[in-house]
Length: 180
Image (cartoon, rainbow, N blue to C red; front, side):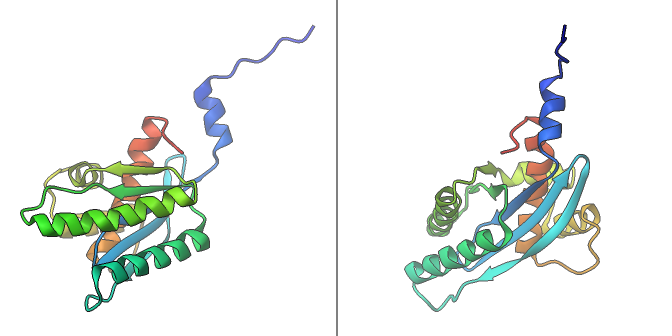
């Protein structure tokens, strides 16, 4: 007689997913940061990061097309398991918020076209997760991202923010079993 071995869903899930690559994005209409990390167990490793610099002399439509093309290249090259994007904050300037919304729309569409789940996090939650304080400034975020990922080189603000969003998903998403 064979007795089945019962395994908890949590253990089964851990065995199914050895590691998870997360592409974090910090949206912008002039410069969009990206950061790719690999998360496995309690370890997070930096794989790639940088900024997509858009030509500010071009129209918004042209910049959005350029963002779409560059993001497509990144997704094709890195083959992430999922994405993490910073949500729009309430800006004082309505025009800036609308323009940022267009960029976020392109980013969400690119993930969707590749059938990748994308998770969204408020900037306050990202700062709280990475730094420990929701009202942390950009320098504190950059500093903690470098420590958490054991990076020696300096990071651009948008690049550090994108990595911070990915780290946030690695920590919060995993605890909620929202891996993919």
